[in-house]
Amino acid sequence: MDKKRWTSLFIRYGRNEASHFYNTYKDSADFDIVSAPTEGLTMIKVREHAESSLFYIGEMLVTETKIRQGQTVGMGVVKGSNENLSMAMSFIDLCFNLGILQDELQDILKGLEMAEQHYVKKKTDEILKTKVDFDMMTE
Amino acid sequence: MGYVAVKGGTKAISASVEMYKNKNRVEALEMEISQIKAGMAQMINQIMSEASLYDRDLAALAVKQSEGNMEEAVFLLRAHRSTLPRLYYSTVTNTREMFVERRVSASFKDIPGGQILGASPDFTHRLLDDTMTYSEASFEMTDADSYGYSLSRLPKVIDYLASEGLLNKVPEDNETPDDITKQTIEFPSSRSERLQSLTRGQTGAVTSLGYAEIRGYGYSSHPNIGEVRVGQQPVHIDPFGDGEGYFIGDVELTEVDAFMPADGDAAEQSKEMEFKIGCGLVFGQNETKAIAMSVLDYSLSHPVPGVATGDDEFVLLHVDSVESTGFISHLKLPHYVTFQSVLDRIRKTKGGTES
Image 1: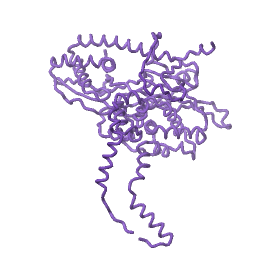
Image 2: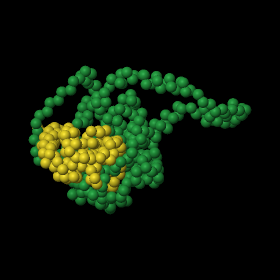
Image 3: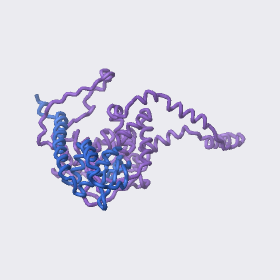
Image 4: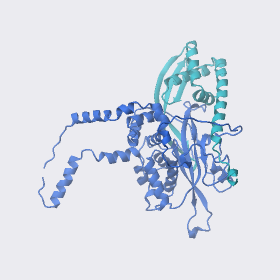
């Protein structure tokens, strides 16, 4: 599972799981904090479709944490002001980069994939109730 | 009368600040940020868009602190933004990946993926609902079958036009955009400067100028809205530049593609007619602003000589909330010396003695 995928699963559906994982296993990996959770901004670059060019739509608040073990770095960057999630995500990133606790992480991610399916299904059902059926107009 | 430099008012200013803080603050303090986020979502959408900073908690705090004053809330967020370091630039965010919660087309009845109304006040009576005075929300959902339907891969309406050969596909332009928060706009402006200015423009100003453009002071025609889409847009960063990006969160966006038939004049009837597209893309669910932005994008890209809404300097320098409200409201601040100067000149022209 690539980084975009597992970060989206934890941030969207597994915030509690990320914090729980960090609190459970943080002592099992000896790491240094390079930068404690800090608030900053990410400028969002978008593609518009009139001329297919790029522009900056604005910034979003993020919280960033960096930790490391030796030369291996773990990064946690999340939307909004959220120190706990940022810290937990940096630890999970470090675990992936070090290749440790992989079975435990995969178990959690399997559960989050199920949670995603459930959420997307429910949300899609809700939205599709507002999909226009033009056939109804002739009745 | 001579000019004298004075200072004063420190005690009065302190008392004024104290009075402002006390006025209505007892009630305001009882409002939770979560209540403001939930109950004033559309106001927060406008504030985030005009402040050019996406964070619902900070926007709700700004609403609370400003007692619901939009211009003050935008000012607070812009000021807060300037205190924070910019840590990252996102990778290119493409609305083709948006999880669509609402998508309608005013140009085609049958669009790939269908017309999805989502949550909108468009179909409600504009009557005050007194049942909301003391309301407790209750929602009832019924099942629908969504298997095989992905709201995060809805095709765009412009793709349909392109497939019909009615719209020329434009190759991707990957030039790094200009950033008006780092470098002051120079005129003539670049397209990226125009779009960044418009997306953070004051909602009312952008709407008014967009209206003027189509009402008779520029394009003077009726654009067709190809697509309005509102939804959750994933944002990624790639700090190491290795293509293995991090997902950092979703932001709600409204996107509008407006079709502008460029039909030319009678002398050009032999030419092929074609569509031009105006782009509107803003934070939050801000549909009116996004539509007006798409109109102004077109007018600034295809200016009509002598028409204000095609003049980038006129439009871009006046739609900014902080600049316009800041300049207008500064007029109430002391101008003793400059006004005395005016009075002196008036007295002189009337034959009085110069002080």
